Image (cartoon, rainbow, N blue to C red; front, side, top):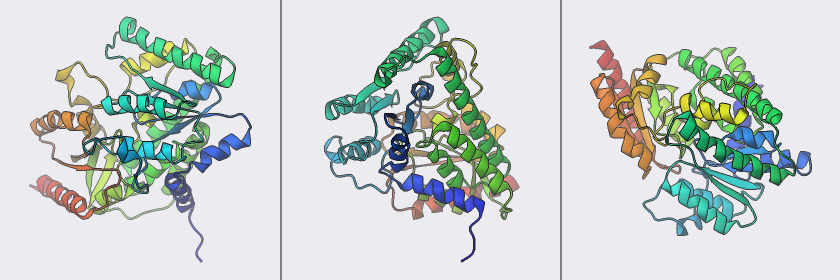
Length: 392
């Protein structure tokens, strides 16, 4: 049997973490030191620094994917609601999330807000909170509101672990996540420069590992992957360079990502697992930590359909910047079925791209999508049209 490469070993480890819907990595982390606690959070954004500063493990809960059969969860939501709340309920009711001591539900949409209330009813012995975020970006209005919201979390987490969370602990955790975000930025920059060396099907798994690993360990893993894949030359193909948009909440099946790549597309930017890149730069670690986190959210955070944007004239500018910065040739809009934020924003973004003569295509998926042939055919046709467009 031939020895596996370092890249294969890293990807295999990440795949195992991705496949494990019983969250054994979280259980092992808790068992290593009796008394440890873990807090789950839904996609998009929560201030994980507060969880980490309390000595607890932040755990990303991104639904059940295409591995989980949803039975009980279907009884709690209508058929015209996206799948992620149903599969998350299924994870909870089947005991797969028993290792969590609490759950945070960020401000994504009405469905997730509703899920937070449902979770309070279903799991009365767990800490549950809906994490609201400002829609006014003035530091004295929205900033003050968000600091007050984070202060509530800070006090609640302090009660959970039996000791207050100090500014020093918070600043130390901010530094840890600064380093993690820096590593993710390095990974994304590397993929954009050499997408054949870092296929998104691998980059995605490396990112997903950060949902269950301590951030310090994940940062090391990301940099080990970059070094390992750079040392393993891979064939370069004449693929179309595309940006994926709309995948910020319910995640696509891994086979969907692979199908897009097999169809002749290099994915050079995306909004997958957006929490890893939500804050766009270094958050200062010497001031008031809640104030610095608030300023970063208000003024230096990613743009997404799940985040309120009062400036309609700026709609699409963030996506245009992604296309330009990453050298993309087109955009693939991939949104979960019934995802109101993504599907409501999509026509506005398409109009902007059309005005700037940037090719784009669109489809919908569910986290358990099984039939990939039509998506692969559509992505392949889009890639071919980009090549013809560029040659014309």
